[in-house]
Length: 111
Figure 1: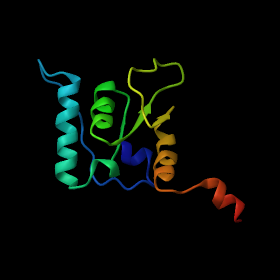
Figure 2 (figure 1 turned 90 degrees about the vertical axis):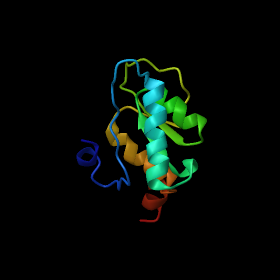
Figure 3 (figure 1 turned 135 degrees about the vertical axis):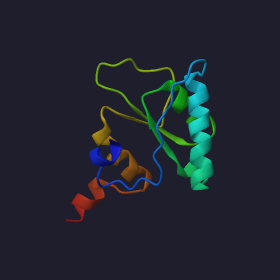
């Protein structure tokens, strides 16, 4: 589970995707993103969507959320341009830090 893989990241809300007959990935993405914005009551610009699925990333990007594609080294690129890319989940913490304005270079140069 994502919380065990990223113990230093505080998640306000985690939702799982769902699969039903006749429901497209884009339908699921829109449903999940609506739940996120309803549940958190936050603006899309303060939300980061992390996925390897174009439907989630496209829907998130289109409503103004930050996006991060998790893509293994030799996996297909996908058809949606994202704000960030990560080869594995462990790199997502760096994305969160970048969005929060935390720079490891600044931390190390002040040591």
